[in-house]
Length: 458
Image 1: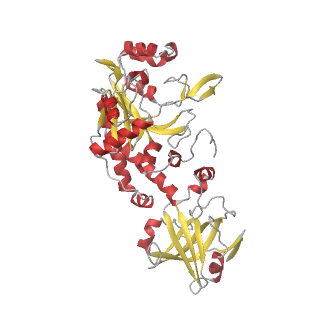
Image 2: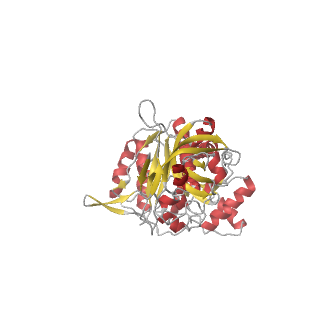
Image 3: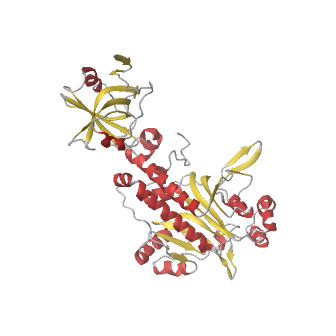
C-alpha cells in the first residue's frame, strides 16, 4: 500500500502483534543481539547518502545512530525511491530486518521493509544537529531543541542525570530524607539585592537564593537528615561562563554535627558517589565528549583561613584580610592543591565572618572567622556550607551586627528559642559540577534551557 504524506510519498507497512497492537520499538542497544529479526525503530533522519545502486539513511535517537541500507536489489521500489525524498531531521518510523555488516559503524544495519515519515522537517534548518556547520553558543541556545538533538548535547544531560542519581543514592543510603522547601520567600535570606522580587497576591515576595533557612527549620523540627533538590535564583548582572540566573542545587542538612568537618565528610562521600555513578553508567557519553574520569580520592585536602593569606602571598598574590576569595585566589589555590596534593577537589574552611551570612556559626575562640566551608573543583567554587549557628542569642546578635531586620526574620529565629541541635550542611551547584567535570566551556551548556540576564526564552 502506498500512502501520500506531504511532502513525501512513503511506503508504509506496520508490523502488528497477534492482538493487533503495534510492536514495541526496539532500543538501539538491543539491536545487535537480534540479528536476523524484524524490528521497529524510530528517530530523526541524521543524514541521507545516495550512492546510486544503494542508498543509506543514518537514523538517530537519544540512544545513538543506526544505519538503514536500501540496496536496489533487496528492497521494494517504493522504499528505495522514498529514501531520496527524506530530509535531515524528518521523524521516521522504520520496520526492517537486522543484518550483520562489516562496514556499518555498529557492526549491523537495517534493511527496511517500510519507512514512515511521522513528522516532516522544514528546510533549511536554522541549526545543523550533525555539527557539520558550526554554530556559536547563542545560536545553539536560541534553537535549543535542535541543539539538544546533537549527540554531544544529549550526552551532557545523560551524565548530569547519572551524577544526580549517584549523589541521591548515597544520601538515601546515609539515612537522608528528601524534602521540598519553598521557592517563594517572604523575605531576603542572605541580604543584598541579588534577588528576584515577585508579586504574591499583592504582597512583595522573593524567589529563593538558596533553600538554606527552611532546611535549618527542618532540623529544628527534628527531621535529622534531609536533602533538597531543586532550583534557586540569583539576580546578578553576571555575564560570565560561570553564572546563570536560575540554577539547581542538591542541598543536604545534618543534625548533631560536631563541627563543620562533619559536613565535609558527607559532601566528599556524595561527590565520589556521583562521579562513580557517571563512570559506571556513561562510558559511551564520556568517550563521545573525550573526558576521562576517575573517582576522586578522599579525604579532600583542606585549606583554612588565616593560613590561606600566607599561602597566597607565597604564590605572589596578596589578598586583603577579611575579604572573600577572588578569582585569582581561587585559581592559584587550585593550582597549589593540584601540585601539592594531586587533587582537583579541595575545601576552603574558616572564612572571615564579615563576608558570611548571619546564620553561619563563628569560631568561639576566634569569632573573626566562621565555620564556613566552600568546595572547589578545578579552580571553581561549587558549594558553600559548614556549621550553622543554633544558639538563639548568637543568631540574634549576628542579625543585629549584619544590620538586618530582626522582626522580618522572626519566622526563622523564633523556633531557635525552643531547642535546636547543632547542625550544618551545604548546597552544591549541579550545573557547575557537571560543566567542570566534562570540561565544558560554559555552565549554560549544562542547563537544559538556561536563564541569564539576556535570555528568558525558549
